[in-house]
Image (cartoon, rainbow, N blue to C red; front, side, top):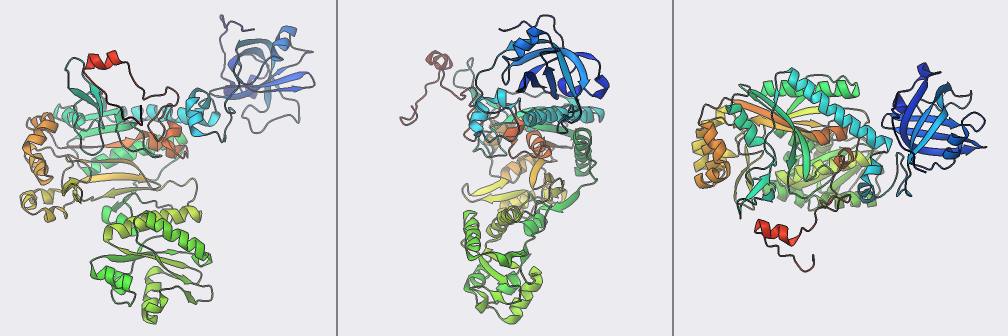
Length: 605
């Protein structure tokens, strides 16, 4: 039943054929997307990576051998077809297909392979469980929407190389097996067979190597690189992910931002045909937090945070008053048209606030007739209510919601509620691209668990030049460091951070002081980062760079819910590959050769 391919070669991909090919004899190869028998005439939609075209096997016109084979064809059989392109009869055109006005009258049909019963249909919009899709990823990728996403990913790769190579960047690979330098996420470790008891680590990023390349005189480096982080997963994280990584010598923030904007502009124009407006807007870290509750603001909708702390300190409502007296703040969001919310909906919103760390949520409804409805309104004077409505821009029909807590908690909770409300009220417009640079980040923050300062980005980020001279002072009084700003910058698109970078520390003297500020001893710094510190002593130029999350960019470009949809073979949220059943146990002799003994908890064994 199975035919040989032999010397059969395709002339076109299915989706490439047009009315200009009418009358041409063509050879096609692909899969049977669907099979229909209409009164003895068999219609097969033949599919390959470029699209679908209809082939027709008419017993009165096609060879008997071809017709007999066509009767055996089922979904996803692999076919070779030779025939002539003809116009479809009037009234049978399919406007949903680019090839919908033509079809192939078959003269030869070969069945190159059959297909077992499918676990899910090979079509768009299926509702199969994700683990089933990942187990049969080879089938999932055949679906047109998945194929298109991987094609777009490929085009992003190629366009990235075109742009950066065209701007003087050299593509240089950095090692996959390197030294463990734990600072943030856990490392994936690889045992070294030739050095018993020692381990390599898979790189969380090429950070140290790209800085060393700048010391090497490369001047402009880039690579599209795999990175690895052993952390808890979610929709926008994978244990292995891909970055567009680049670094430049003798630059400041403006130089890196200009190249970054140019690259993103080029990608959207080349891959999607979208002309982005440059330059992108900019916003300080403080402004982003205080207006939107996050350093990744989604600017496609409003719902800005409003501060009523000055009023709250004088009201009789104890929750507000006590919060302010303890150094906290009171802020809110005006939910336009929210007076229609039922009490249950408001209670549900309160529960959402609690999920994100709030103790509760206060609210005031402004009814359509102007009357107020709230359990707390009795604690406010008319003047105070009037001022709150003024600050919140409250009008009839609105719902005002408030969080009273510490600076950090209030902004975090309202940031999450803002996103939740935008989704609930369908305020997010489609096909809108809102880019914003977030700049002027704090250099450090206080980690309560570790009881020390930690770098907000990483310990190689340069402080603002005006803060470098105050490092000695800050080492003595850590509170001073909390006012320092870094030379870091993140690019945010539609509420998702798609890239981030900084101007680096190029002086070994300054780097040592920053380590000291972070509580990293000379011994620890030498053990973890000695090779970089040593390189900085040998004429390191001023340098900086940025890394874009390629997976996340492609997910946004393709309107995908998760980066897993734009990675050929991703892991689940538990870090498992259903296709290969990785990770898995290995044989005892492999472990013995590595000098490793594994103790497996009883509940896992």
